[in-house]
Image (cartoon, rainbow, N blue to C red; front, top):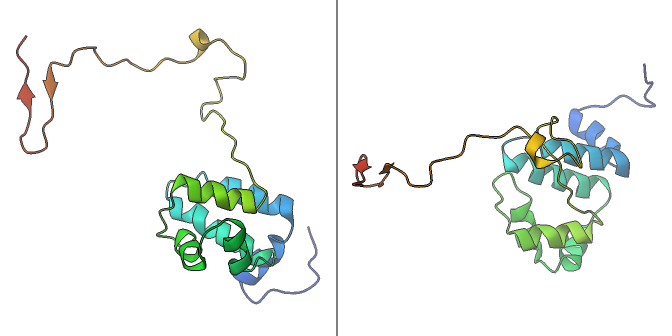
Length: 139
């Protein structure tokens, strides 16, 4: 059991103290990327900035974004452009790395061994049109 030096009044206080550790902060960000709602990751970025003493104005200046835009990006309803996110990552000395979701696909394994998903037919026999139900194509 890990002993804490002081009791915490609330979770946010505890989280902000833990996020001062860069390795913990990085793991925290990676875990939030697994959530299907993108706002979770954006709020996590905001928490990390706050915990590590990041002044939003100076981070915005480093990322070449205005402060209001940075606050909007880091809200739970933020919808940042890719170039805004990468500028923010650069300002925080972070980089993006991709990995396979399916652990059966191993690094360096030939593509033929990977589980194959069904392939759609080359020529569809019907198409969806938003204003109509379904239209059958003539062959």
